[in-house]
Amino acid sequence: MDLKDYIRSIKDYPKKGILFRDITTLIKNEKAFKECIDQIVERTKKFKVDKIAAIESRGFVFASAVSYILNKPFILLRKKNKLPAESHSVDFELEYGTATIEVHKDSIKENDSVLIIDDLIATGGTAEAAAKLVTISKGSVSGFIFVINLFDLGGCDKLIKLGHKVENLIEFPGH
Image (cartoon, rainbow, N blue to C red; front, side, top):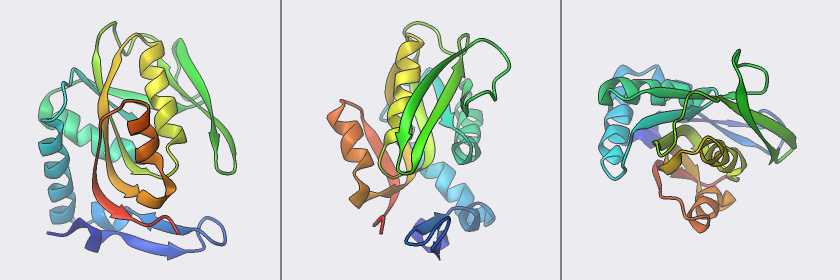
């Protein structure tokens, strides 16, 4: 099964000039979603994994299923002011502004190997911030798995240059 066939592309969303890669068409198809999760689970064998973290919000869809299958704790990396307990936070640059992501201080213990899963990587700013959150928490990033890599935007290359292991299931140009 070619998962690429289940990704819808939408022109000029969320703004003119962007070609949005929509994963909702993949997750609404039970066979494609199962295949996607199975492929992610298979790729996790390349990493030491104590915990699985996901970047809000579409990363939660994939990482929670993988966490369940692997019987590993699931850690939420959330947007600013979405976590109720004491949190670490990291500010980062987006293509069109800045943002902050956070993790509960008690989510990651010293020396935990954390695999970070997300639906898509573009320029890598959010993923880099996620890695910083794990490090601030005294854990180590075992690697990243993305469903989609927008290869010409350089996010995976950026993470690799920072010393991270990266896997992805599908590649598209970023347009």
